[in-house]
Image 1 (spheres, one colour):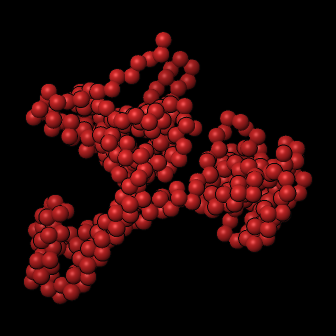
Image 2 (cartoon, helix red, strand yellow):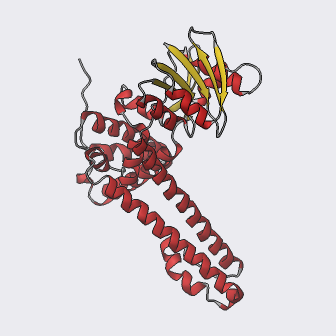
Image 3 (cartoon, helix red, strand yellow):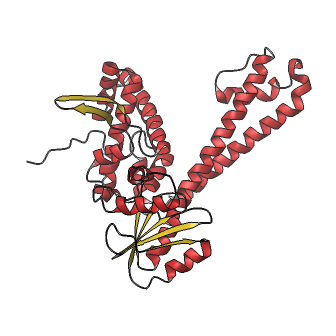
Length: 347
């Protein structure tokens, strides 16, 4: 099968054709429309090799719709195969060499719905960061003027309308009201994103089952399903956890084995949501331990004992690692979450 490597860009596309492994028979440099025609002109099935970048999934879907095979490679795995200078030509050669390595797992081509869902999460995250920036700006202005403000964000926003009317900041009062209006606008945008997520996943059985997992809410469940796509490509929950960067980083040589902090490789946004959710689940377990210990599940009991042994923050990350494995099991085996579930090893 002919293999074609493409170095994608905004308006210039470098193409390298290879019929036999390790040998480039033709090179082309095309613009966007010429590249689209070039894909459509391939009458026989072709394996397209591209780096997984912003437009790779769009071109991958286009090639797949015409009956071709698509292999998206992570840029980190392509870089070691590039020789000498960083050029489009050398990038294509590096992709052809990396595609020959069977141990490099390609990135699945995302569907249009997956990308739309991820973009919705990205919009919400952008508005959340802008909202936090405005709140910090307002706090700093009031603090510089010697005005004491509530520590809680909710209490601060409730009292902000009166605080910006204080005589110490009277010359800036009109501008500070604009900042307050921006904060309210960003909150409305975030709320609209969450409502749209609920509408999109109202009939999604997988998201509903993941939402039942302790520490996993609608945001985390929808972001996880959009990022993973097909959980069957992971042999077990630990592979999914390692893919998300939740497993320890290993420094080993010879007979010496050392495990450090989590690798932090993979989807930063999903990993952040998982750790924040595990913090909430750990706090809920600790409250249950102090009030009604007889109602603790096996998972909650493990989380509380782990926090007492290694500390709250490390226990939260360890719980997030376990939640990823639970999500994989719930997703692949299509069963409901049970905090007292005891898995049995095969004989």
